[in-house]
Image (cartoon, rainbow, N blue to C red; front, side, top):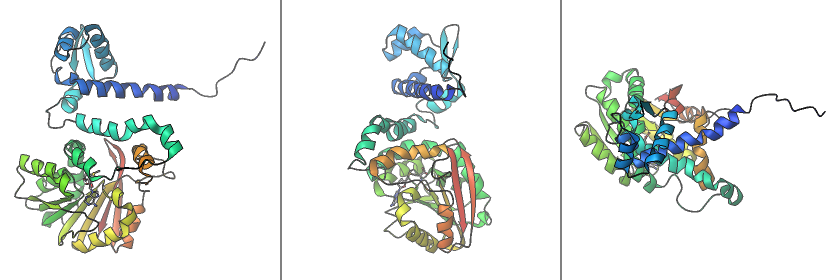
Length: 336
Ligand SMILES: C[S@@+](CC[C@H](N)C(=O)[O-])C[C@H]1O[C@@H](n2cnc3c(N)ncnc32)[C@H](O)[C@@H]1O
């Protein structure tokens, strides 16, 4: 008799990795169809199928899969959103995340369909993830990551900075939608803010400023922060998920930021901070498609920005690794 093979471990994690793709596809289809917009109250599969103009029996199977994926609950054959599902995935709610999920799917997951091609042929010519038009289209939907939990968490940290009650002005560099500035300014009795980004992006910024009644406290500056003047006399300069696009010009940009701050002012940079030879934490995966397509490496190693801050003349840097809904990210806060 031949000895039957014995396992040294479990293959469970490989199976889970594969099946992990299924909830993602189910979620994206449900968002595209607008399933969550219908299910604040319990409905039958027949009602859902009628509203969506879908096949009744397949709709029931699909709704079951949404229950399996913990997006809906099912009772006595009827289906309803779970509270989180309504909160984040029902169109029209203030924290609606669907457009951001769709954008991120297009940016990070979809390009992997062509992964073998990218590996064989190398970077594809054409606009990359630094392209202005990409961010202009996405600026409104990208606000979703900063709204709520994240905005509040960052405002909590910023408002603990020494001297915060005396701050007069802040700059949100590459601020896009500007939502972080809205949270910071709202946490302060009088500080004003300027959101700096490229012209096409700031359309959405203006809409958010108006929507939240902040026009008297938050303004917009349009330009390219690599080549244009940043203004001066800021107590705080905030840069979230934007220095990645300036990785090659980091030293000169930091010198410019330093000069734009008041004495004792702060520069806070919030982005990835990769460890383990550029392979961890999981947020590293998000950079893969953009890097393969453009040939540029956008990810920062942990400590890279802190070191550049000290080199630019900042007298101290405090770094935090933060657990965020998007994964572990780093916040480096430098003092002039
Ligand atoms: C990933 S988004 C981040 C937006 C926002 N700070 C946030 O955390 O959600 C990057 C932003 O940086 C802006 N950006 C990149 N390079 C820039 C440059 N050279 N000048 C001005 N803005 C720039 C982009 O237009 C985009 O709005």
